[in-house]
Length: 318
Image (cartoon, rainbow, N blue to C red; front, side, top):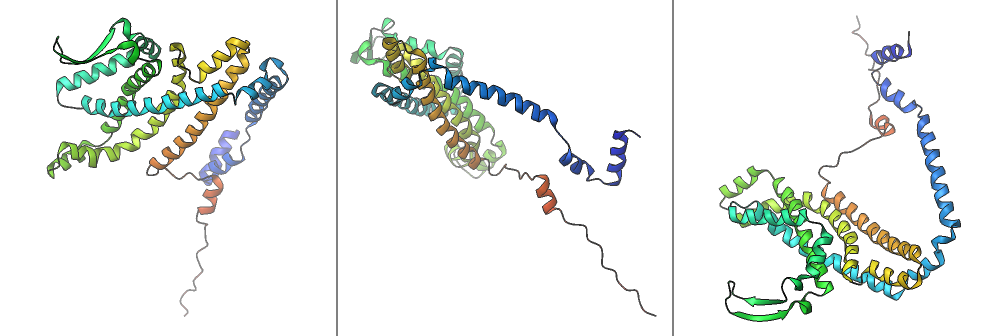
């Protein structure tokens, strides 16, 4: 009898044999892969410590440089403002795309199509050079009507404002798809029931749809915040003194490129790590209803009712 046949015979007698066998099963390739990975990690750490080209003294001194801290502040400011604009635009665009009005739905779809279909870097450069297309910006009536105020485009579209426009408008297109997916996740029958109770469309959206859709909207929004933080590095091409641009301005003078890039990576990793922790708490809170209890084999044995021998009852006495 082969080993497989023995196992099948035992499983026929003991249905819990597969659990017991899995708990005793050996996994030698796990140890082999772990040892190989540890060897590569140890070699990488050795190179980090022994290679003088990393310039760790320069890294530690530049981490607290005044220009680096100011650039970090600009990066965080851009992230916050662009995400606020993106969330507001995303909600409005998502509602417009679900609207029965075909003009509103087509306009929102065209907006999303354009900003998702063109690179963010191209949009930033376009807004930065908007004065080449419109030398003056005016507020007034269209089609040559009277103008109430006129501004110089170069004075209005500063590098900071161009970065806010490029990142915020681009983020609005992506957030609209997240919000739209969350809104579509709510059962349409609940909306029909709310309408049958006499609720208006705005009240149904505010009281019925949005509270349920938030559990599908907020977790991916955390991913978008982290992506926005990293996307702010693109504004260095329009001479905005963010974190990357501050590091570039230093290593262009000192020619210490690698240490300054390590400084940028350390700051980005530190901020994204904080955001990851916050995102995990948010996801845990909004997924409480879907969380399923997972028990280990020991927990299974602990909660499994033990087999008890039925008490022996004495028969009727004669």
